[in-house]
Amino acid sequence: MTTTALADALRRDAAALLEAYGNRTWTPAPEEHDLAEGLARALWSGSAFRTALRDVPPAVRSGRLIDVLEPAAAVLDDGAADQEDTVLQLRVLVDALTAAP
Image 1 (cartoon, rainbow, N blue to C red):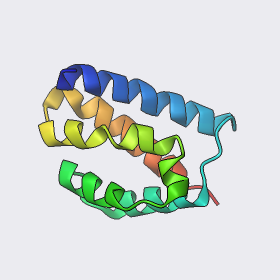
Image 2: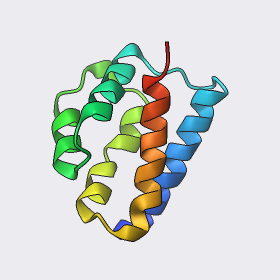
Image 3: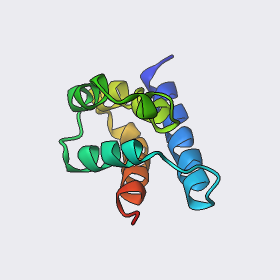
Image 4: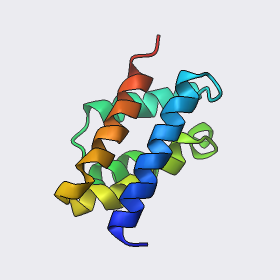
């Protein structure tokens, strides 16, 4: 998959997960919230994402958030201007998770 196609798929997946979170058809595990908190404070780069995802707990590994975050490393590595919308959509998702009570 090309990076542009990956970015498009990632943007759609992040938007769908955000929608599921908003309408409460997906409830992230507390560990997924913790991961989002850590990513919100981190430098957003492919290497930072790979490091954050390296040793995640089983609750994260079996959840839905990981499916969106793992491919993000390749998109962040590319850093192409046409992928800014994808990064923005990821940030909106992470922000929504970190704003939760």
